[in-house]
Image 1 (cartoon, rainbow, N blue to C red):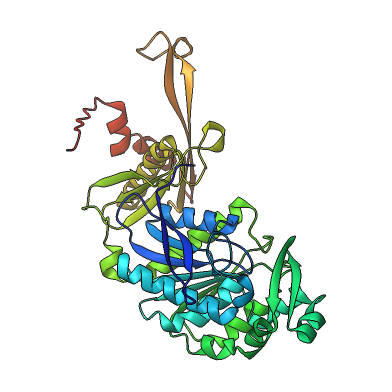
Image 2 (image 1 turned 120 degrees about the vertical axis):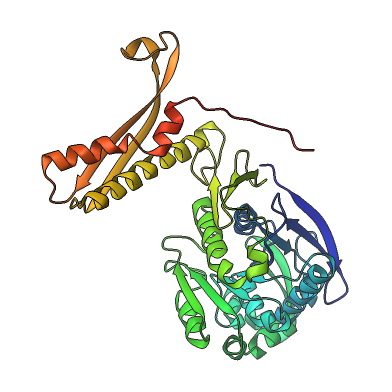
Length: 407
């Protein structure tokens, strides 16, 4: 899938070069986010990639990197621990502050979620923190090592297998996670907190989300991921998380950044997001943001309505509003109007009252339902007025479209 990104490196807390990827929206970023991956994972794990892709579609740039000793980053995993992960996050924030902009949003998955909670106090510019399937205590990861704990305790070091791969773990790692007081850090967060967790997470139980929520002060929010697994391996779950994060974080990004990329009233800007073959973002009138896409059957990712969906929506909303204004002006007891629309192509010779006689023509089927204690005459008048809505007139009359190519 095409995307816009930069491959970067920066020095971690232990002096090693850490491999990172900065995913960017096509336009100027509204804000920057910093993402921390799960225990022994990498920046390229499915959930991290999908969430970054989703956030860039909303105009938010995302930096994700491999912690020391993992993925393409330098260093020895055996010499790392939870504290060094927190330090790497601080180094990443410093790098972003110097070369781009400090992260306004911190996002962490699993143990990475615990790490961003601990690191948040060292990133003053961050206004919002989000955790996904995070443990309330870093020592929770001990259950991954349960078969090797005694050897690590006795010998001070052991090779263990995690997610099918060998890792060397030293006793200092255990000592470090056991010494953490994450509850205190959560209580002192001083930033908006969004907690994602699945009630059927078998790796990190839902009780961890409850513990984090109780320890945190407002503003705080919890969103259930329903039947998602711990790694958010289903694309729909990762996309949903990205959409919620983007909508939620907008409140905390500040007015100056929210104004970035906005258009004047009466103007619509459409631009590719770079996150998919057909994915576009739509900025309307300086206030409203939407997404547009195509369904998977034609090569899109179905992350938003299609162009024809927008056309039908424009026509349908215009008809609904026109009927509402007319009914109110006449004092008709219209409770609610429902407009259902469908677009299709038909053969011209199947249309007896069409000017075009050959080939295919467009047909829009519209069904209108009217609720309320209306007389038959009132229902008919409201129905008839719908065809007089401005958008109906626009698309059924001559239209001049004047295009120009910008320098």
